[in-house]
Length: 244
Image (cartoon, rainbow, N blue to C red; front, side, top):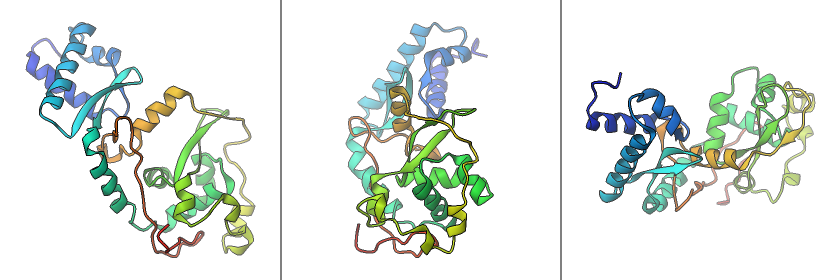
């Protein structure tokens, strides 16, 4: 497919491939598309793209990470993007999000399958939203078939609900949903939890906040989005309204 493409078109297509990739794009994977190009030629074209972004002071950069190439926001834009996330995080959590968050908070570390077994519905969107809001994080993998990610709450989760530690969570018995939580069994089965590898952590940190094709934020490396508390009465947890 690359026989008739001119160098400018190849560079344009390279840019598009890096943009749509959800993880760092490896040179060997690019080579599978541009079969007539040498790896060194592909790298030269990417370096040319990187230079173009930098010379025009673009808000987007192409960075090399985890052995591949990925788009990221310019370090100079970090403060503006963090402000945007503050606004975005004032959106109220939905009932399904709060229910899933309660399951994670009380039973962590849990897999997505564990959450879905309790709620009875697919939780991909809910988990993705909670990750974007920095209320949960991937803490490792469970050593069962498929080695699924396991999730736990973040420091921001505590701030968000005005808690000093997880020990301050209300007792399960206080909730109407207590039976759901007390009788919950791990659908993923018993298995050892292993931490993420350093490369997995680097890749995930770059992909965090990248939903809706939004590139990773760079403040030299990665600037974690900040959030603010919301005023809503969830079915499981009660959010604070004192600015935490």
